[in-house]
Image 1 (cartoon, rainbow, N blue to C red):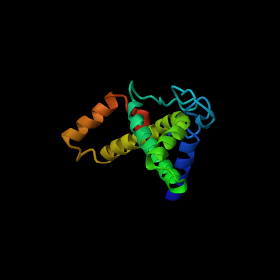
Image 2 (image 1 turned 180 degrees about the vertical axis):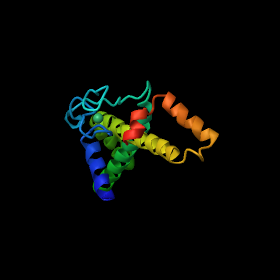
Image 3 (image 1 turned 60 degrees about the horizontal axis):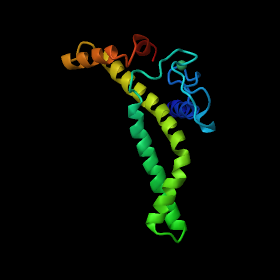
Image 4 (image 1 turned 135 degrees about the vertical axis):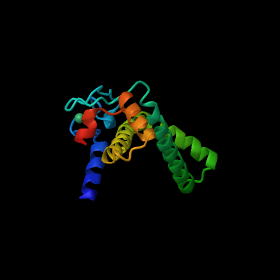
Length: 159
Ligand SMILES: [Zn+2]
């Protein structure tokens, strides 16, 4: 059962679906077809995708990581297959990466939405399970997370 839910999460990420209802689209068109505009809210369950201003700055770190993996992997492949210097292989890997850069940036947003949501829901769920043992500090963290609009009461009840 666990493997099944993992594969459905991966499928939802690849299809860029809302992390809550898994049926509303995050983007107005598929990111695999070109640069796509993002929906502000899920068209099905109304989940707000950009939780707060600057929320997607975090997605940039994922984007850098993916870009690095892509470039290093491709440079290694070119260097191995062709009689090129490592410098030439890296330059070509960067040039070949450029057309894929917008796709990687948008896909990183999808990963960021899923990852932060999972993190926040786990955190609040853990705290809800043990309300009596909740420390003052944990209590403070939960309240500030809710205040910051990172999680709504609806989220923690339904998920
Ligand atoms: Zn939704």
